[in-house]
Length: 402
Image (cartoon, rainbow, N blue to C red):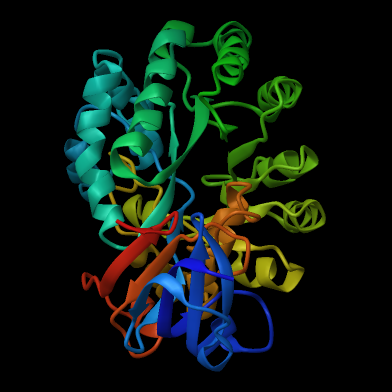
């Protein structure tokens, strides 16, 4: 067994579930061949040499981080809404007065794919600097056939220029566009479902998402959307139960959804359905904090039911203007009571599961893609503890330093 690269004298947080916290291996090594982990184990058992051998001098290694819910591609600015919320307006009031998603839609429709991609690069760079190796990027700010496809193309191009793995999600059912006011069902049938077919045909989307809420789309409309997604061979996920209990978590679980995201108002039936389907709960503390929500997601009930919990930034220009996955993980602990190990799993193993990529990334195991984050920390808890400090030493993606 000969490796392309052998990393020695490392402390590994493999994030493989088991009796040992973080799946930790101390004084260990990782052998990489053809971009994948070919061998992993204690230094005493290293089987062979490599073309390149590098000592990590006792640094901790985790899987490269996964941000499994972002709206990173958009145009325009909504900082005025920050001031309006501070003055006492609610997110729902702002949305119904023409702000919120609709304001971003107006600006995004005027931008082309190249402009959208260029605007997203600085936001992507901030996440990369924290150890992110895989990121999900949604459409949903175009709300026309052409502009939604432009957003997906922009997101795909970001993967090419950044070296990160970009998972794209079609979120055409994000908000009801002004031209379809009062005709949300027609928008689903005339725009969203044809978009699903085209995005699948062109290979532009890895999944389909929607917003199930009183200010967006009804469960019945989303059911039609999900049927079309399944027919096109695309998995589904859902913005579920963020502002009210719409039964969204139960609905997406019925379709074996990858994830249900937000979940502040999810009931016990929704949690039970997610547990049965294996649907991941994506915890989004940035939006909870950003809109001044008081209803917390049911973390204790999710944990008790055995529902996997991921953590993501929900990076967007309005409700969660945050491009720090480490801060999101810290907030998940401090605001919602997740443990540090749960939070670290949430931005690695469970984030990968929420994207349908658990067989490829998210844990350090033989055969998986060699996507690693190397940290200058004494304990894994430091990665989550600090706010604003980036203890990243470096990233290896696909077996190469990036």
